Image (cartoon, rainbow over all chains, first blue to last red):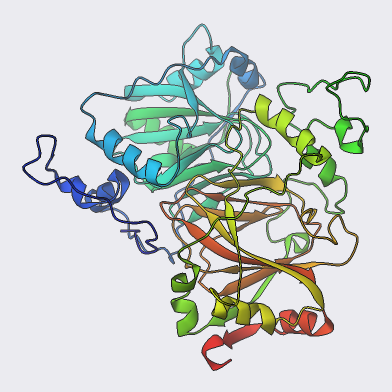
Length: 228
Length: 248
């Protein structure tokens, strides 16, 4: 649990017999991220710990990566559902925290062979047993992702441009900076957040799914991979 | 800068009725902060080792005691003052908002909010400020950073201070008023700063660019003091150590 510095008023609660009242374990918490912390047992939640995330030396080298980004077109976010309790709970909390935009964390586009031939090659090379998604994430200056626990899928992020002053990502208590274009890190190993305090737009390739043995072997082997 | 902006900001000709009547030097840059960089002697090398001395921020001084542990009782309720030091005739503002518009930064309060320190409402914080024995012109504020609030990477100009824009030597001190939370980040040069404790103080060379981000689930409060330092101020900062505020 991370809720020590509490400084916002507690939410009002509808009475149980109200026609719109819901009952769910998550509603004992101010937001769904706090609730999900309780379900994710693989992290110590000791904020004074020095996390040392597993690193891969894998790096994709290709000058054409940034040319794929010229085809970036924001796709509409279709992840909201009429009965989405997680979204409802978090939106209420975010409103209380004065975050009044749904697109505060950035924009995405699904990778496709015709628009992103290089990124598609990278995705295929990783040989996931089952690929859930391969997306390009665009993060404008001041956009951010809240600190939250990872999903149980393998999620890799590949930086598509060199780091710029003010760009930050955090895995557990480890801050990531000074990355090079094409470098890979395993996002799903620890709770994660990011913030773009720079003067530049950040582009990241994010690949999520169930890895094959070959995927894991390639991650372990690391090294420079020239994408041609 | 290496990754160039995906746009160029056009400059209105001086005779255009919308143009600022004076051609300020920062209008030759895409963004006011790019111009502000030119006033810094810091070497803008983004691959610089984070432990490099040029990134140093002084952080050897801490305020401790029960009054610090309970400091939020003074900070709250937080009374927000005007968010931005922007004026109707502020050419700096003009050099910022054009870039903001093209970068889709549509929340002008993205840097957070501030409350002025008063003896009445904040006796402990006032004691901390007095302890530093600044020579003159102290401006102090409690900074409130909501989740998602961000200070873009910048070089300080102390533009809100009467001796700002490097007219006189100023010292700025930040004092964390709460323990660090997951997702809170600060950066000086290429040096990240996390895992601070309530009462920890930091100060830094005015030339070091810096930024901060609150990606946590918590509101963050910091005391910020800016003023003309006395010799005693400098000596106390240099000496460091733990100061028990309960005994003062």
